[in-house]
Length: 218
Image 1: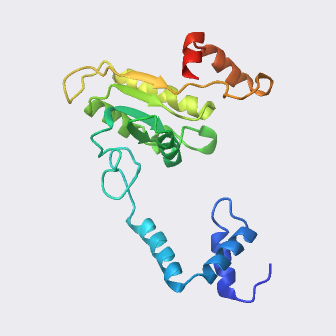
Image 2: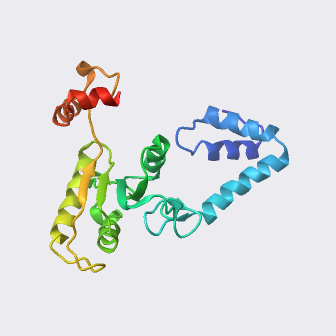
Image 3: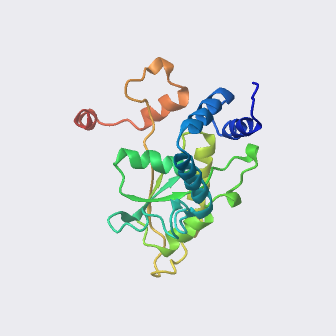
């Protein structure tokens, strides 16, 4: 791809570094910005710059925030005693878009994956355990991807919590006693059994529901 301007070429190369953006798409984006009023492009660059320099991460759940605490943790209308454990910020956005969850979150920033060199110490696991010990948490919901890495992470956290279940909670002097659940896994509505993998089909059988409950939920 030949460019008559090195400035144009540099801009295209920078856009092409973004995930899912190839050189042709990057060129279309740059040419679109080039047609805009200079105030529009100035605002665009200012917003991106402020996002990178001013955005923070919640001290409690590690979600993106404008201050020390994110809007979800600061919302008194949310169920503060319920934590949904997710892998990354995109998962929070996905769950929030369903408008079916009213608790809080805890972002691990990954999952345990020895092949990728990711161990428990590189994730926000210890902070999750400390949070459970210090706060009056009633339920822990695991919403991790249904794969080996996700299941390994769930198992590790479960064992870690079990090892501390006999210890006293410094906040109220009571042993840790919380309900631990995971999101249901199975055949998606509209899916066909012959195309489902063995693990998904097995989980569907394990998580089977009474017909009355299934019909009433449709």
